[in-house]
Image (cartoon, rainbow, N blue to C red; front, side):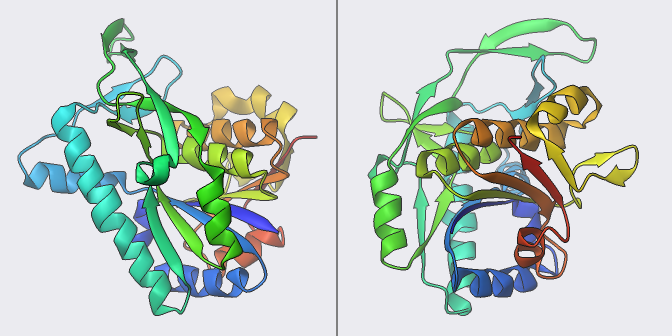
Length: 269
């Protein structure tokens, strides 16, 4: 079975990260894994230390994102592809998991289209059009390099940075990256690890929900989870068998969610 797993950068700072990696080791014995990682908080922290305060914008759909100008994309690439990616490689290698760290620039793994403009909403709900900066949307995945690594028994660890048509790095959303990679590989399952136990409605975890039902409850879902749900729907539309959303800081998070013991299962039915 082929699994694409998205891991938020915040999980790396939790004490349970070692349990996550040991669980990854067990799962990797039976299944092929592609890991996509986040790390936005670390980017913000290091950018601040470098004297570059980060700006965040809100889209009309309620998605919060980093405004990525020239200086920010340089810091983002440095932290994400350098520090965060290699931290995960080291953590996996320490457990005897053969890992290869890649960002979307390597072998043109992720090609993207630069957004020429963005629509941002201010605190009063007013919309304004701003320059797109160095943000983009993935248009193509080089599945050959991923398949080659998977066939040789490696776990690819992918940083969400895409290559623009002008050979520039682009900041692309991590959850959407995981969904698109999963779709391109026709993965059996997309697992979105986060810091909450799954999709929460009316104060309770939803164990299982169909894509059609999800669309109806989207307005009731918070911004962070909404991004993951949209990514999950995108993956299902591309033929991924199942989307699993769960906490990455519980005991055996991957094994538990694969057995449907924790988290939320989103199905296409």
